[in-house]
Image (cartoon, rainbow, N blue to C red; front, top):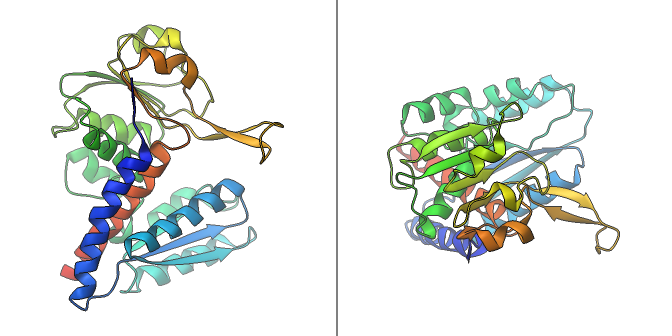
Length: 293
């Protein structure tokens, strides 16, 4: 059983990115620039954004963190996004989700210029992904594909089961795994809360991608021997014995499932780190596109 260590895979991606940025700086070009908008004081969002800023620094990117209180109006937020869209020194824009209930997530996503949509959520980005065109891939599925590549996980001709149909992970993941490229060419079954016989379907899977947000949902009896397990879940579960009062749990019961798998991602230390690697690669690509234009 192989542990698919996100720290190792992400370090490899970041090493390549840093080398590219070093060449840019040697040629007196500016750094790639990622602007992140954070609203409120959600603990998980704070952690994610801080990690993104830190990783930008590690590879030599410039990063801007723009903070707003929860009471910001939708109009004010959209105005700030427009300002960043028009700033030629900003290559990528991300708005950390979730948003306050009075702000439309769809409006915010659509307000970001597709040329700066490094999260890959804009309808234009999604449409291009479906058609197999060059685009920004949502960061988590992109990170998973980079991880599969790094660890030489065979996907061609395999049966992949994706549990979860969100626009952020499940749907794009199913498209990527079925696409005609080295980490694709799988036959994909996309499962969700209304899927009957879920256990029966999972037992047919060579690869399981669990992305439903329910800690410990995937049990050993759902997994056939030798399957590859990609755990996207990252949920804070209260634990009085933990130093912080909580532990991070994945969607897979790791202790049960790991002995049956041929390869598995840990939580934490797996897909989450690769999500940031995907975001960084998207940002560098946005910079290159911006430089050409």
